[in-house]
Length: 400
Image (cartoon, rainbow, N blue to C red; front, side):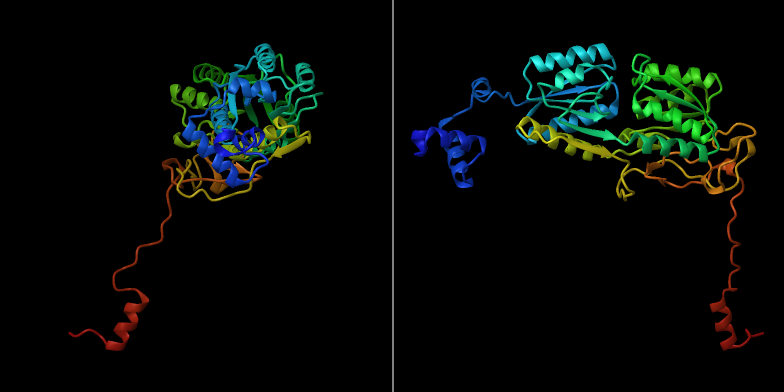
C-alpha cells in the first residue's frame, strides 16, 4: 500500500483509520486499497491497537419491546461510528447479569453499555476500575462509571400518578419488572413516596415483560378488584389489555391503564395506551456519544438526566386513543369505584394520551354512547338566514 501510494506505512495506517491526514490523502489511500483488494485484519489490528472495535451492550430484559428498540438503535448508531455491538440479554436476572458482565470484560470489549437489573450490585464498582461503563436508566451505585444516561424517574412517576389521580382513582396497582431481590430501584422507591403524598392506596406487584406472564399477573389484580394500573413498561401494560379483554372489561371506562415508555406498538391498541415519552432517539445519541468517547480514551465523566421531553407535534403518526366528552353515566366514570371523586367533565375516560412534563396530548376525539346525549345547535329553517331576509326586504314581498 505504501509503495503504491508513495506514502510511508505510518501515513497509510493513519489514512485507513481516518486520522491525522488530509481528506485528499484518505481518499487516495482508500482508492488504492480498493484497487489492490486490501482488507485490514481485525485480529492484527486489535493486537496492535489494544482495541477490538466491539462495544458490549448488556440489556436488562429483551422481552421488553422498548429495550429491543433501544438495542436496535444503539447497534446502528455504533456501526455509524465504526464500532460493533455485542448484545447480550440479562433476562431480568441479577445473577445472570453479573455473569454476562464479567464475560464481556473478559472478551476485551472496548467499553460496556448496560441497562442494569441491579444498579446497586457491588460488581459495577469492580468492573468500572478497568473498563469504561455507561449506564442507561439508573445510575450504578458506588461505581465510577464513564457516563450515565439516567431517567428523571421522579418527574416521570409523579406525572403518571397525578394523571391517574386526576381521573378519580385512589387505589392503584403498580406492575414493575423489579424482583424482590432488588427492591431499592429509584423509580420503585419514588412510587411509594409519591403515593403517600397523593394519598393513594398502592399495591406493587412484580410482572414479567412478556405477554403471557404479564397477562396472568394483570388478571389476578383485576380479579382482586383493581381497576387502575400503572405499568413500568408498555410491554407489561399490554398484559393488562389482554386480561381486561378476557374478562370483557372495557378500557378506559371500566379499567384505566398507564404505560411508561411510549413504544410505537402502543399507538396500535384500541384505545391507544396512555404512556410517558422518554425520547428513545435522544437516549441512543447520548449513550453512543459517551461510550465512543470513553472507548477512545476520553476520561471526562458525563451524566445526562433524561426528562420527559417538552410537547411537540407529531404530524403523520397514528392518532392515539379517544377523548370522550359530556357527563358520563355514574357507573362509567373512567373506571372509578363508587364514592370516588369524579373526573373533570371534559377529561372523563381519557386513554391514549402521551404525557410530557405535565402536559397531556390526546389523540382522536370521539363521543362515546355512554357519555349521554350530544347537544347540537338547532338546524336552521330554510330561508330564515339573515342574508335571505335582507334580500327579501330589498326586493319587497313575494307576489300574490
